[in-house]
Image (cartoon, rainbow, N blue to C red; front, side, top):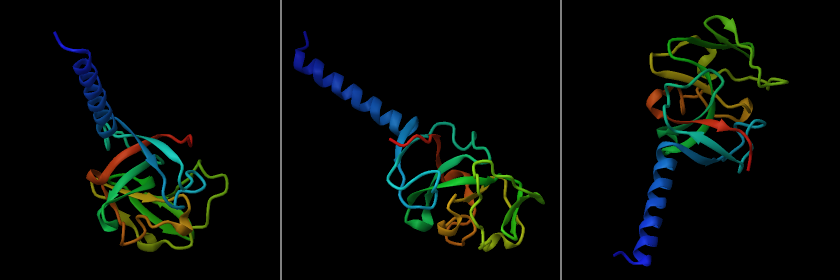
Length: 166
């Protein structure tokens, strides 16, 4: 007959395994670092990130977490603008998708997009590539830059499911 101590240890082990599985394969708490997603997400705030079923469930305007090899495998947070197979271009401060101006409903007053970077010419996304931008366009390193560039699907690690800071 097992002792109470071994019963408690087994319970703690099971809870630890459950927490590990949920945080690595289900949902995870993510702390925002930096100002590139302001005013939507502020530095040092926490977000819930879904990790299961990514990138199959990615849609335009979703906020995603990305493992960036260019930034020493750091996790970064960006908004999806261009989807696989689309053509993205930035002209005169406006983002165009397949030749049509993009309406961005999450901005009451869109930030200035003065630097189109690589998107000054049309960029055709591959079948597993995404174009991402930070909401704070003047302070964001994103798909406009050679440093980040287009995001391959296998670099996407999660999708933000809760924007409530806690």
